[in-house]
Amino acid sequence: MPDVKRWYALAVLVIVLDQLSKWVVLENIHYGETIYVAPFWNWVLTYNPGAAFSFLADQPGWQRWFFSILAIAVSGWIAFELRKHPEQWLLSLALALVMGGALGNVIDRLRFGAVVDFIQWHAAGFYWPAFNVADSAITVGAILLIVEQLTATNKKIQEKTP
Image (cartoon, rainbow, N blue to C red; front, side, top):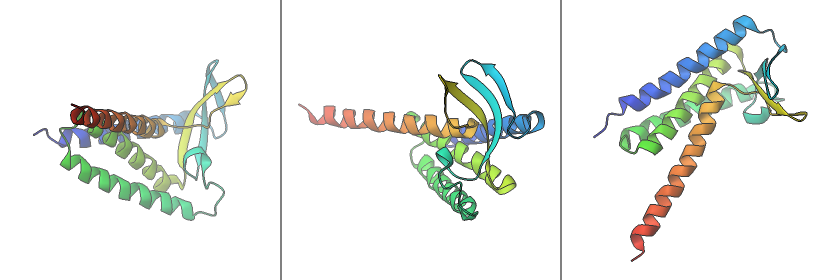
């Protein structure tokens, strides 16, 4: 049976990379400053007190604790699921990425009261909301979960078909 520790290690690696990248940004970019990287990409330091796409960012502060508790609870569930299914490579990879990203953002919420975002993509005058390494890990993990579920469903259908 494969060892679950490698999936926990991946989640920790995501947290470390996320926090290191944020440390570099906080040391080198001022709030609201924009640094041109490429025609579609800027570095810009922002703080998001809400969730994805600034959901609930305009609330008076309760969302900080709500999203922190939610992320910790989901990460606990993921840790449990990883122990049950460490041999399922795609599922475990997806869950480890989501857990690492969620906990990386929890650290920000506890330290700053908001999540540090700094990657900004844009094209033709349209700007994607700023995000960070943790958000990227969560997004990739979520996409992999969908792929895993679709491929698992297809396998079950094929097994039932004579």
